[in-house]
Image (cartoon, rainbow, N blue to C red; front, side):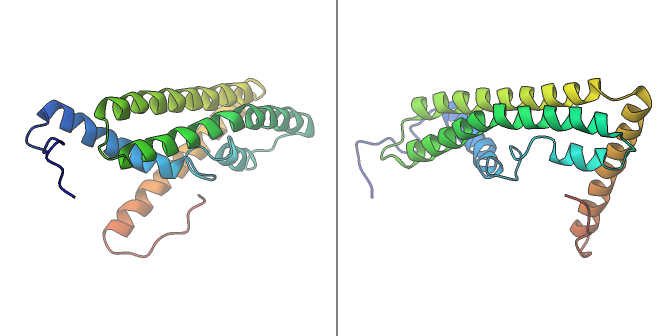
Amino acid sequence: GFNPAHPTIKEIPMKRCFALFLGLAILLPLGALARPGGFHGVPGLHLERALEQLDLDASTWEQIDAILDAAMAEKEPLREEIRAAHEEMRMRMEADPPDLDVILSQTEVIGALHVEAHKQRLQTWFAVRAVLTSDQIDALAEIRRNRHAGFRRGHEHRENGGPETDFDR
């Protein structure tokens, strides 16, 4: 309910309101992506699917499997930190009254964790790339370009009222 001790939206400086709404617009969708299978899902799953289209020998697959297994073990604690940070953000935003400074601080924590997760994905990619030949890297880049183009076509088609396409997700 209304509490006269809490500032109204008119009394909160516009920059702070903008920062809060921007933070919410960024963080709420990211919270959904932090769940298994989302943005922070299995590292290399899409990469592994693309690699399956290449003619890789058993030795190369062994190296890639070792890289992906190590990445998964390294990523799991970070994934739990991200989940906990999003939960903390939800709790902070539901507080009565919410403390904007604490919420903005938690935004920084979540952002830093996402940056770390992105760095881990890049390290995984470059470790996998190091075991591929230049021809395999080129072929993989073409597979990924075609896949991204397919996503764009499917998205445009759905926006225009067409049925959802069956792209590899």
